[in-house]
Length: 253
Image (tube, rainbow, N blue to C red; front, side, top):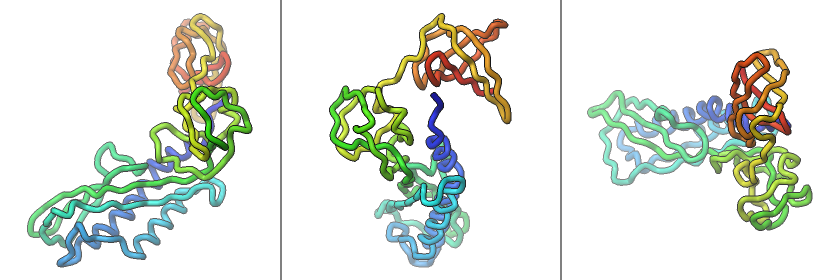
């Protein structure tokens, strides 16, 4: 079993193209804040800025099927109690550790004005793409079948646990919580599978840039889906990888 590619693609989008989307949002907000006599708490995004965000969202879908990904940005509001000094130039940036993904915030800093200041604007980044949803209400403990599941457009950024792009990866697995009809299936919603135990012989697939090498090794711990495991190779080297199937471990070099 291989990892579904969609979470990887969307994670890359969140760190790169969506960061640019947030930058476009910030540029428009900063320009509005720089207008004389405009109170920051009353700032709204103009049509040109919204169009720029839409264009950046379309650019974020590069590499995916046309229409497979849709980005929406929902800007929040600054604290209405703020009373900031006039500013001629404002710099906007994502705070250290922040991602242009889900609920986040962006920093606005006055660099040319009577008095320097810095504030944070809350934003919500939504990333819509195909994902698996419950075809009907399902109680906790349900062992999933194909007819329990269907595909729909879902917000991949709404939850810390990634959505699932392939229904076949869920069939036969038990739900850890009840789901309403139409609810998105996340990786954390199903019980993790155990692929092997310590001492078992496992097939190793080591992947690097432009190559892959296969071999065998001995598992040094239980192989639980999504949890790193150590494997000792025939020459005594100990590698760390991820269980990806029955007696299979994938190692990134």
